[in-house]
Image (cartoon, rainbow, N blue to C red; front, side, top):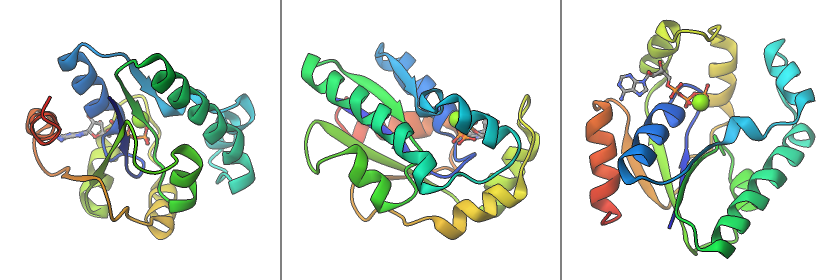
Length: 161
Ligand SMILES: Nc1ncnc2c1ncn2[C@@H]1O[C@H](COP(=O)(O)OP(=O)(O)OP(=O)(O)O)[C@@H](O)[C@H]1O
Ligand SMILES: [Mg+2]
């Protein structure tokens, strides 16, 4: 099984994903690591990515997911995938991939991002993510106001893992 964790910047994808993968003893792939260097530089300079910028990133993640499915390897993968079009580029519909959306409101995520270490907080970026967000109407929705351990437990229980 592949668990795809989605949500806006600061929703907790990396933190929850790493904890869940560790708990399950599964490999963890953080979607951010699949950006080409040009995108990383843009993000560093706080320049919003265009859909054209996202194409090679989503293609690389798609390749990863297809390869994991082919190898029948269980894994936890993260990708913000805030728009349906991005999710369509990642997945063909129901299959081995379980989609988990981390849901929280702007104020909570803003507060967490302001406290996050090693990251420069970009309020505009968070606002633009909420503006662009198309919440998935399928898959599992997890409330991020809970403690991390409760989120991991809820995901495991719901997916019977
Ligand atoms: N359930 C939680 N309770 C308390 N703090 C949390 C929780 N989930 C995440 N955090 C904190 O919120 C911050 C953002 O989380 P994280 O970096 O995992 O988000 P992200 O979705 O990976 O963001 P990005 O898209 O920018 O990579 C971190 O400092 C993390 O420790
Ligand atoms: Mg992250």
